[in-house]
Image 1 (spheres, rainbow, N blue to C red):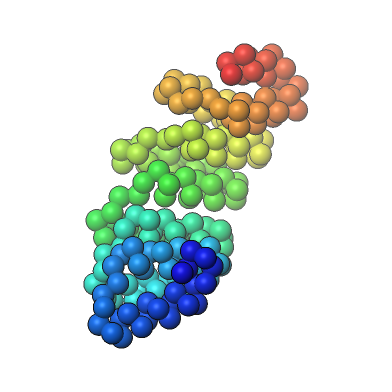
Image 2: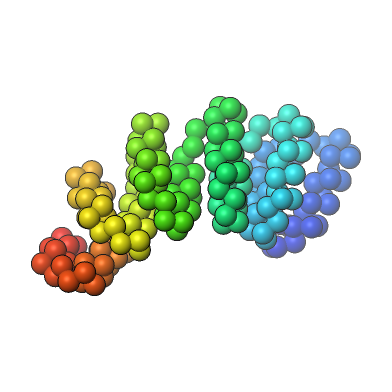
Length: 192
């Protein structure tokens, strides 16, 4: 029901289930939480998360990722960070989606040092950056004029055998051309 955008009906259904003594599981809660998040009903999603916890239902990584994504989109980074910390207290490790969501927010805010630090923490936690991670960082660095850092990251990406895709190369080439660094732009072009 909620997938069709009728989250209010789904929420009533959930409450009715609880009143009838039927215990919804983590997937039931997560579908509704995700639907609320996508409808910009973040506070309602948080309230539902709290109800889920109070019913003794353990959230999963998807539950947390939905909330973290919604909080980042609402520029509520402190709360997003709290939910990321809350994950570990529930015995759940952040996954690549968790990190990429937070990295995207940090890069859009121009907080590249924090984003680069998060990539190190991510690797320390056993989660390796993927092409989305690198694209997000490179785009963010280029957008804020940090081309040297972006090209270093591009080298690191290639060193780690992460495939260079059109998005990455276009951002780097465009930025290098704007800075009149044509030889480097051609080198990137030839790598793709």
